[in-house]
Image 1: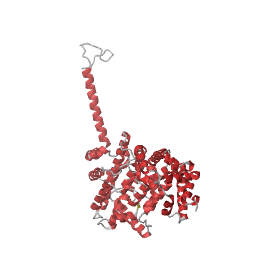
Image 2: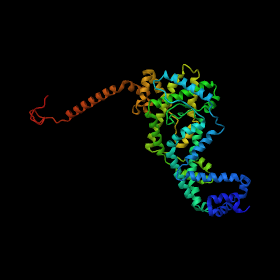
Image 3: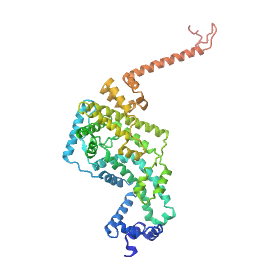
Image 4: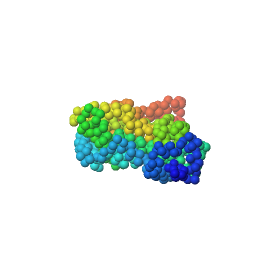
Length: 475
């Protein structure tokens, strides 16, 4: 077999064209034995494998052309990660069991809130189906950061290519196309890995406190729910009903407050768009890993490439996100507890277990933190739950739910620390606040008038300059 026909020369010629010999020489100079590598890979005995490798390389370069992030690859990686360990198809029997649990949950929720359920039928999905349904929203939310990382990484790699060894190994237009595909490929892998990990850990479409579906409906993932229930000393049907209650409560809230999903997504997008990439940390990661292994390079993206310090605007947006998520989760906790209390003996332990799971930060939360550098565990959820509980006790569920009618009347982060005082003001109503304003204005006006009299110069008896028309000022 001539050198030109060996698998490695075929691969190098596919990548570098007329510069393949230079690339081969560089490999040998670096101490690599192409023949041994080819033998170890099995390519010598399996031409189909070589064709597959070349096909994959062509596909990556083609997919990444003109894109900052290879979203096709992100989709494929997410599907692959979600399917690890098996991803059973949802049978009709399993689907019916979960739909029954949702119907039961909706009936119980009717007793504790007037918010209506979604008019759309619930979905029962495999993990792969969850990926298909939610990835468009992931792309919207994480797109700004993904593009920023890709552009920064691309600039570093193009600079690295100017190094003599890389220039010798990757000369020519074909090599440039390969280098140009690395950044979109790595970021696509990064996005897909995070979304796929989410699919392995999420019970539905609202686990992180905001909807991942464009159409608001209840969605459950049976394989994840079963794995979760297997580790608990609680009957599986109680675990299923509890999780269906939480998913249905989230969907009712987002349906009743149609401004809420868009407002929350806008805050997250605004936060994500303002994230600054730590170029120095990214450059260090590239120099340590190199660009020969996109998988290792993708892994390196998790090593602190997001700038830890935020601007004042970023801090304000982050505080708004955390407060809003805490209010959402607190409301869901309150109505879920009230709906389940007469029916589920284990509701207390289930609620506490879920709080601990969130506090510890499971892979789902970590995946989103990796994507955005954003901590989405609502640290103030307990305070928010206490606020909704006290408001329900003092004023009833209708008054509690009325708070969601407009974003401007929601409690602030400071209000969560003084929940009773905020509830006092809320129950007093706007008329009471107007009366306070009127009394304050009257006091200020009176003080201003007294100050004017005190500052006025004394006039002698008979002075007629008081009002400018010759009349004396009355006593």
